[in-house]
Length: 280
Image (tube, rainbow, N blue to C red; front, side):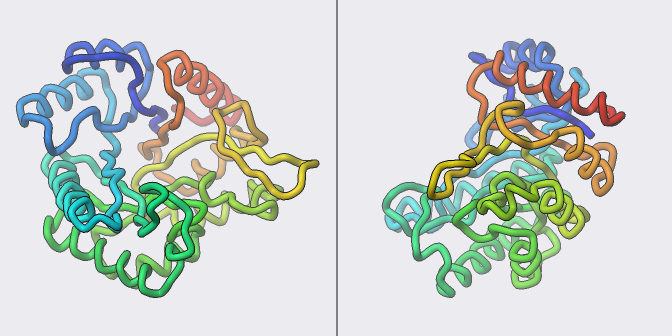
């Protein structure tokens, strides 16, 4: 698999970004540009990644398609289409967003409306609209699972794929986001195996992080955290992933903030991969 993440650190241009990329050791990265970036600058970033033997594995949307402000929702939809078009043009396999919410508490907030039938139908319609507008042939639009938003489990993701019914709709894997109950946390390896067994053929990118739960406090508190700060056995998990994913599958560390934090997380996961006999 291709282990990587987001290239962290200050950079002002593709040349400075390339230096950070070279030092990171990453073989898969998130796009350091968007559909608003000048085309010649995008070309320079892509060339830099190629020189360093890295794949730009995903480009994010990270905007709320269901924002309660209609103007912001329209802007988010236009941006999602623009991001998928950039992914298609530059051969980035995964264009990823979350489904969206009508909550006024934030773009990724938990809200009772997230699970209504009306919202589900809006999710299906929005994914179709984005894909049908761009009509990609090599890029895929994906939704990152969330603990409180569709899709929040492997079966729910499969059902959503059937309902969307578009070949360019694929899977972004974040199993930690789907570990949202003590049952899943305490049987994490079995649950992660289920996720990859059911969704493996459709996965275009995977996020990698750790999970922890307070074992003596009531009521349940589950938190994502950096690799090594939680309870997950990464050697075992990487073996599961290796069983279901192709050798060039991108696996991206996420939610660290500094270059050094990403480097430490990379070291932990790379050491686990070495113990499991899996090249990264």
